[in-house]
Length: 281
Image (cartoon, rainbow, N blue to C red; front, top):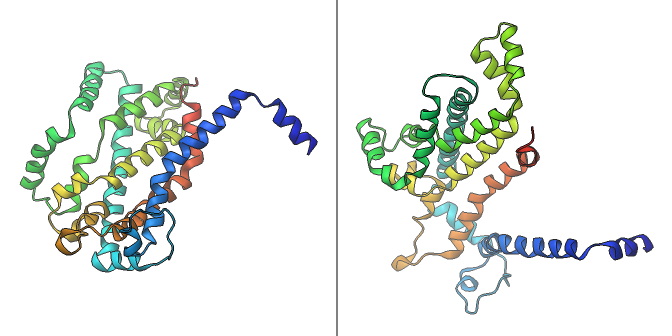
């Protein structure tokens, strides 16, 4: 007990303020999630009551049952996994190949190509939506997984992100592998990629989350409810006279965010490791 008191007396005021600020910011960030979780287990009368209460007086599973009965929920969740997972897998492959070429191979026009790729980040997504839809429609890919995944199989941000990470790796490992007779692809696959696992996991997490939460893309490129994702499917939840059942909506949102939480928990150690080592030589 005396040791604890001594440590408390030695704690700097700045440390205390930092801890208090961290707690306040964490509470603000987690409050919307807490509202989603608690509202999902409230009966409709409590959800619509005024003034609203944070904790439910009566816990119920009716909202979870209703959301799974009104929507083809298993199909929507499966579509979300195929869409977000497929985009993530293809993006990691193509982004890493392009980033390796831009970071480790000297060829004419490399800087011009890099500037062109970065410039595409400044183009609003909405500006390319109609041409992309026309291309997908011409290929007959509307309401198909190919139409959802293929246009996002590579990403300018992912290429730039991985290029910066590849630049931080010492070039001596490339030279040693080439002296041993390794081909360029062998250097990429067996030397560079194993050292870039934290960056690949970080980019994979960002890509998966962004596509899992995307609403506009599935709404535009799918007109069949069975081809929708969980985010686009939740827009179909309307009650009598167009009234949105907020409790049911929160139950669907709760189920939708669970895979994201699980994905982050599985790779959080490597994710934090990548952030902690960014910029180190």
